[in-house]
Length: 339
Image 1 (cartoon, rainbow, N blue to C red):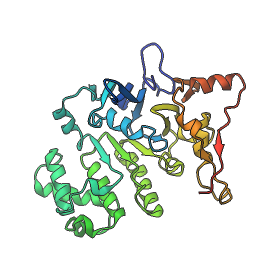
Image 2: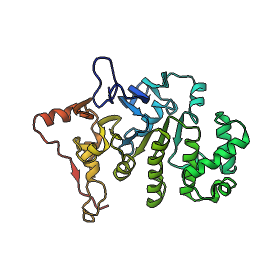
Image 3: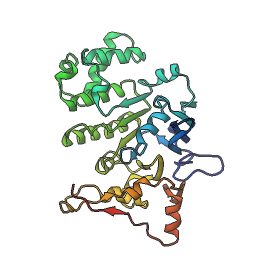
Image 4: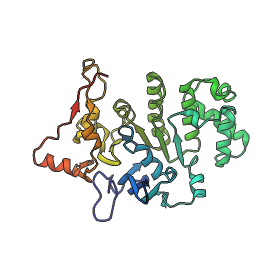
């Protein structure tokens, strides 16, 4: 069990009991039907607490379970998934909430920024009408005139020039970076308590992606929104989790193997997988052709123990913590690469 809080003893890596949470997920397991009557577990009894005005990064390679976990704890588990545990949002368990309730929450109190902005924008409708419809659907404003005025404010909020002109455009008439800004504007249009951003910069040019990340970082402060940010990129994780209280949860094979403040986890990682991810990150200090990669042995291991807090706010899987206590250095199994 990860990052849950009880009256007796908070779990490893948990936020202090007096911290107000936008979402509190506990002991979440996600399984899919396998062969015959078997079930294949992809998320194995983990949880996370998301604080308002805080960025929490889910960091890990493709296939680690980041997106499935994020979708599941917000009540949007993939089709066919069997989800157990709890995920409390304003006292309501999203894992058992009716679909009608979830539809009302998503788009109003829970916003979503997709990897591909085209997935959230209708190519046949003008940008303005899509923002206005979102506002009216969730009763965020009183009337169409107020919705249009709010749409202009939102485009200005995400730093789009000439917002009145852009509202009249179709999605294909603006750049990819601008479409992502528009997707962010829609996600925050109803002042949500939580925004889930799934690799929002990965489909963009590097310079544009950085600006999108910086935009999200600034919005959480201005709006007081909790942001759950999904990425495989160490550099992006460090940039978006820029405040002292921001956190990183490192995911591997459906488990959280290291959790703590971003500044600590990314500069003094304890888990061999976290170390390997950082060592594999491209750097000007690494000669071409000498870049390390995460070994298949490390990537394929699935028996990591539950989180154990090794210092306030910093937790790592119990087996790694035990090795640390015994004076054993869990060196990262790395391989050379020519990529």
